[in-house]
Length: 246
Ligand code: FPP
Image (cartoon, rainbow, N blue to C red; front, side):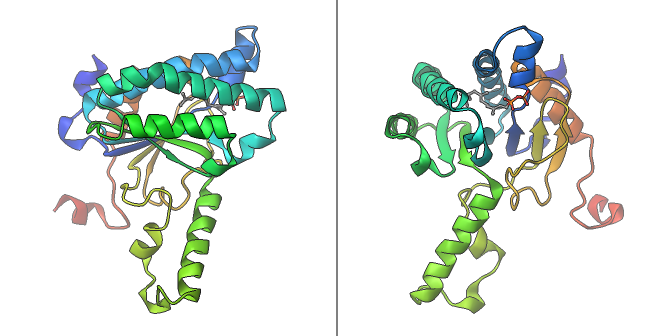
């Protein structure tokens, strides 16, 4: 079994996923795009379960990008209700699996009812100590960097921060992922080899894994395959192989 090929000692602490291909999957099955998104929830359930089973600490899912607001209104609305429905339906399952749900992104841009349900789910799962499931919603990497810059500029103006104190760790503490380790592994489904404005700062040293599988077909076994592939790689962080091995 693929799970047996994974080295338990080198599990990435943080895996980020660009879930792509719902629309194409729906088209292949002769149905509308919303149907594809709905089937995508089964894939989410499976990888949340799989990530928890092997001890991944953080799983970040790109569920709604800043750019997704430009999709047809019906699709945006359907994605909102799907998200809220899925969260409400899955909450007991998340608690049973000790999963803590968190959110990154411009949540204030969502309708009030979506914000309320998100906050309830975050609050309801806040005592869980297993996997951190981080939903990136109305998120983009550039948005994240800009909002960090604005916070820092504000602190400089009001004298709460000195310019010579700004370094990488101070900057990172203003990103929406403050306190969360950078993802070691970034997965994108559907055969597209792009980052599409996802975690731009945080993926500086991430390993990328691109798979042609369309998101609704992705299951925990595919996550395990990605992790096994990741474990076969040598991460050098700018150093030489000899330095890494010694
Ligand atoms: C990309 O496929 C997928 C999305 C924009 C939405 C992802 C949402 C879900 C899987 C459902 C809800 C999620 C949670 C966390 C409960 P696409 O529409 O861009 O596909 P295409 O490129 O084939 O058109």
